Amino acid sequence: MIRAKMAQFAKLAAALVLSFAGSLPAHAESGWGLLNMTQGVTEISRKIYDLHMEIFWICVIIAVIVFGAMIWSIVTYRKSKGAVADVTLVHNTKVELIWTTIPVVILVFMAVPAARTLVEIEDTTKTDLSIKVTGFQWGWQYDYLDSGVAYFSRLDRKSDAARELMSGIDPTTVDHYLLSVDKPLVVPVGMKVRLLITGADVIHSWWVPAFGVKKDAIPGFVNEAWFKVDTDKPGLYRGQCAELCGRDHGFMPIVVDVRSKADFEAWLKDKAAEQKQAAAPPAAAPDVATAAAAG
Ligand SMILES: [Cu+2]
Image 1 (spheres, rainbow, N blue to C red):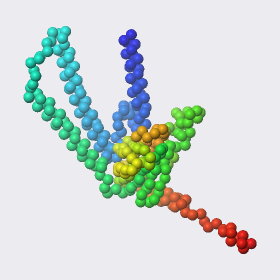
Image 2 (image 1 turned 90 degrees about the vertical axis):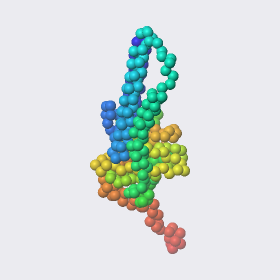
Image 3 (image 1 turned 120 degrees about the vertical axis):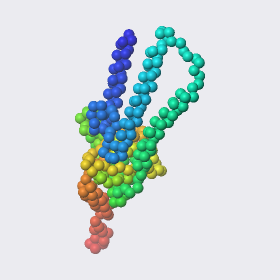
Image 4 (image 1 turned 180 degrees about the vertical axis):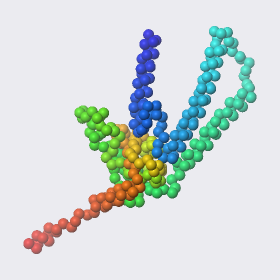
């Protein structure tokens, strides 16, 4: 009976771990790397990863020492072995000093590098390019503030069709199901890109793990974030809205198309020209009234 229950529990735990692993879409790693956070493609994302690993191992060491001592004590001094509780030890200044000082030292040891990285993350000065990001139900709007280029980015058509109830399309046949968009955010490598993040309706959150950026998009507020992708890492990077924002929260992915500087400049020029043309008034049509009067 107990054995069957345990087997059932093990199965459930395995299923949970697997489903968790499967829900981490934005990571390029495989195997165990999938369970960890990504190292990303920016200096800041690597610093965040290093901090994460450093603090993770500190926690592991503390856990091993604390649980080791606890389990050893429980086993060694158990009642069946005739152990009797010591009720005379009520206060010991030396012990209290030790168990206060050690955690303080550990905390300071963790806080100093963490604070240093935090200051760097918040430093949005000296940026090369500013893009306003507006989260809305359900997608993202990107405004290139210096060039006037602006467009919406939504879930791609294929995913959108496949997600419909009884669409008849097997989602496993759709490439990057629910993770592709019609028009990705296009940015250059090696440039400090500043994002001005806000919301149009409710709170969303712009999250791209590979850049180490996750920032809330709040209506009425403008939050700042920045990233600078390594010059040798152009490519497509994916993310998602990270703040439960309503019915279609799971259907507003983020894709960032990181290109070389020259490619980016060309794209921006084309896009600006395209939008200028679309916004221009149509060529003067013949005046129907004058033509009729003349005839
Ligand atoms: Cu959202």
